[in-house]
Length: 83
Image 1 (cartoon, rainbow, N blue to C red):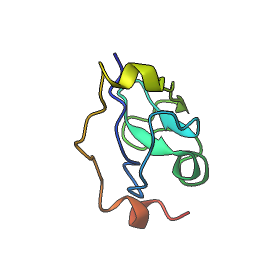
Image 2: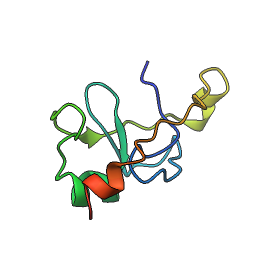
Image 3: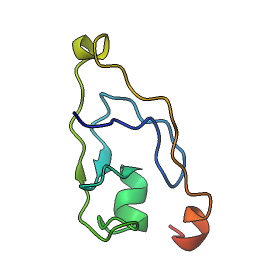
């Protein structure tokens, strides 16, 4: 099961599990659409892999498969990748 991280790892924007505008790589690095497209050109800055739309988790599945609460953030991301 994918770990649907709660935030963009660059700008720290909150990302809902049903948000269709979230991107991930094969290591599940997680980015909002603005960072994925405009800062990284749909290439993960961590692993250089391609970024693809993250699947959404239906509300009905959240009761038995809740989201993680740990936020991952690279505080230098915005400076390293100006948009």
